[in-house]
Length: 131
Image (cartoon, rainbow, N blue to C red; front, side):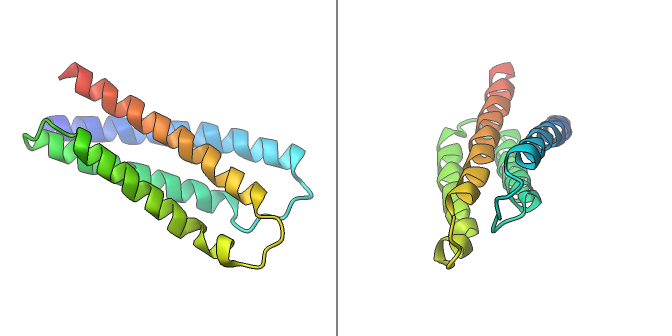
């Protein structure tokens, strides 16, 4: 369990750092290039969603790996599918609304979605290679 805690704390700190950098860049770009665009979701809500889901799913995989189940690929694939369902559920109010321009919100959501997914895969691959 000591390895679980070390990996969890390390991932949490890295996730906070990556989130801060990506959020800062994203907010900067929106401030200077999309001032006149109205968004359905505030950008912070998108990042809170990605942060929580990524941390939760990494924690589940880390816990399962630490408890002796070394085969986590199937779990990762199931959780990735669940993450896609959560993404659709998150975007459902936008998709069902009468909001005129939905495309900027969809881009605001899916660009960080793939960045967080890449980071999650990178972190999982790194700790699985060490073992």
